[in-house]
Image 1 (cartoon, rainbow, N blue to C red):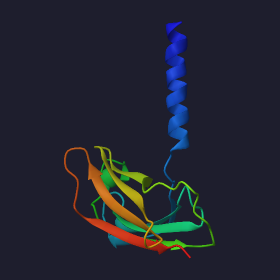
Image 2: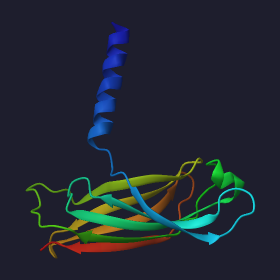
Image 3: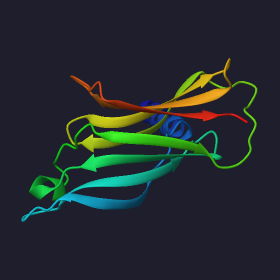
Image 4: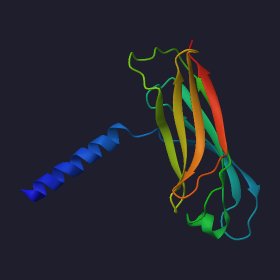
Length: 153
């Protein structure tokens, strides 16, 4: 009985996580910013992701990536340096009940609990979507951020 209950709890959590999953980014390309003799080069990469609720909105984010040996094996902490630009790519209507705020993208930038998140805000008065990218860390985040707006037409 107890095993069945635990299994049911895990199933519900997995289903909930799958239904509120933020967008997944696709790498568009990267440019080397500093050549490293050992390991990967430092670079800036551009990724694209579609808003999970509005497939007619695509966001492009450029972000610095740390190279070197630690970067090559996935142990480096990427700097909190990024830029965000979102665009409407086709016509759409907002659903009747549209949330005022929602996390639409999250990507780990360190093995030590640091990530970059994009949160979407809805400004009903101005009929605009605002996308805000921030770097978050459990102990201390960064005030560096980037913003982009999409006017609903």
